[in-house]
Image 1 (cartoon, rainbow, N blue to C red):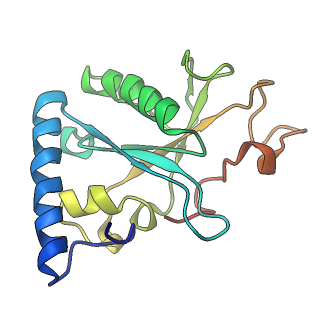
Image 2 (image 1 turned 135 degrees about the horizontal axis):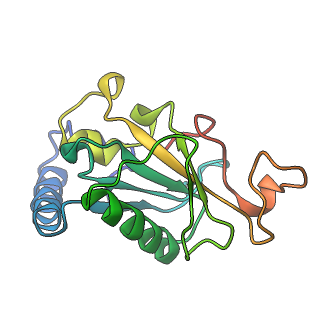
Length: 169
């Protein structure tokens, strides 16, 4: 499997063929649903969390969405639900509180200040270098007791959700 940081610039025929298949699959999903969800499992280095993000919302004039620190099933369900609202015309803004059934206490929309270090697949899709990355919003979820990372008593190590801009892919 190619490196998770792969930018698409390679001369290896096997990797090029794999990327071509991924591009065709991604195009079919975006054509059908208007967006796709890219899930990236936890990295091999400490501090590399699992995360997921959308690809396709930028083409609708909206920032892509990022969720960090949740499992694949929850990440997909959450991004499918919220991105589906964007497809129907909703515009999310930083600071907004979303009531999402997949997360007990809800979600807060925050700006992702370093999308070029996170959205490799989306930037590849839109052919944008990291320094001109597509914009993104991080959906910050509350812990099972209902607290957010900025609340007293938040246990970031236990819940594994880094703050926007403090992590990279």
